[in-house]
Length: 332
Image (cartoon, rainbow, N blue to C red):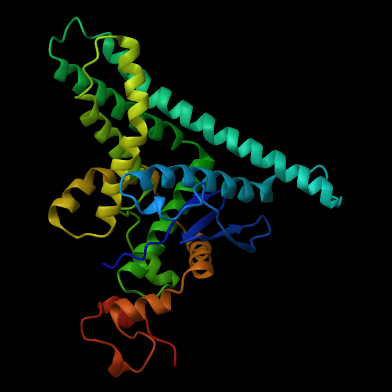
């Protein structure tokens, strides 16, 4: 497996794929046609050197993913809105005002999402575990109980939303996203047949990242020894950027390593992905392929990392996977 360093997410009836500073959103519109939009993404941090600093880069990458995720989700949803003003053209000034409002809404949504996530997954478990302090003498025991409650809330939340019809389809697109990345990272030609038989789990998934956040937070909470309850809560909040940074480095390592220890650490996150990814149909895979091809030259990637796939038969190395050889190569 060779990491391609591309990533993405599922949106409403579509897929977003990001490669470097460019991203593409492919959406299956109500008329069944696929709309593809390609743009450059400007990070919240203009200094690229900052994004190379270990542990620090993970904090900004997490916020960037939230901002871009909200932006692309809003874009995909626009195809399914009941437009009351359908057919009416907007002036440049009206469009600018609408874009400004949408940007403000997205920024507020991202901030609110972070606040709610901290409240539900960090603060609530602490207060729930606090009810048991008279039964547990050990501080270490209390920390473990708090961590178990945190993981239980996280898994319960995923299980709850997974029963929603729209979310189920989004999870299918999520599976299509993973399958496309796994297909090319395992040396196969990017086409529906090969994507279909690829895994819907991936070690660099955001689900695995969030699961690691839960686990890393348990470890960090072991070292909180403040006597004041208010101070203990404030320290937990203050540690969130560092927890996110450490979790990002773990995911980054997992996505670029086949070390048995790293693979073992990745297994719990892959197990959780069984809840957030579902098997897609071929129409969803087609959307995912279009998103990948809009920002990533997978043919060049396969040639550089797995040998020449698109030349003569003699140029294809014997070490290529059988599934890649069977896929057939177009004439040069």
